Amino acid sequence: MTTRRRFIEIMPLAGAAMLAACSDKKAAAPEPAAPAPEPAPAPVAAATPPPASTAAEVAVTPAAALTPLDEKSEKAVALAYVTDAQRADATKYKTYAAGQACSNCALFQGKAGDVIGPCPLFAGNSVTAKGWCSAYSKKMS
Image (cartoon, rainbow, N blue to C red; front, side, top):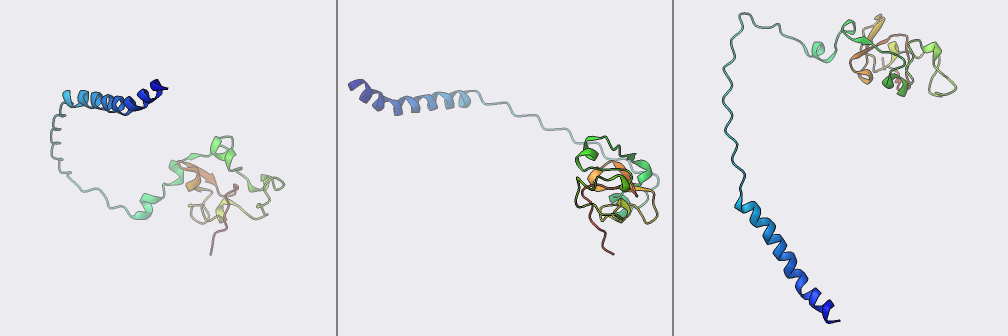
């Protein structure tokens, strides 16, 4: 029993000694300071200012510049996207109703009459106006 008591007596001291030993190593060898970065060169003034862009131009990328979404891509499969809403699986997706399509979805960012348009769910891709996915949300008039 004396060995247990002795162990309990010295354990706090041993722990404190270990902490002190670890902290001495860091204090003895401080890391060298990183050199200050050199200042960047001054920008060269452009001959003509760039055209001003509106917030709408920045927020919505033209659909022609986007890659059409492939129905077999991981993103499309996850949201059950189809290029033609008539092919949507109504038995599997109970939220589907006839007449729903990307063109009348709140997420579709194309203009009225556009055949394709961007959708924030499929960033970098365009979707067809007559397509459908499980995230369909009716556009408010």
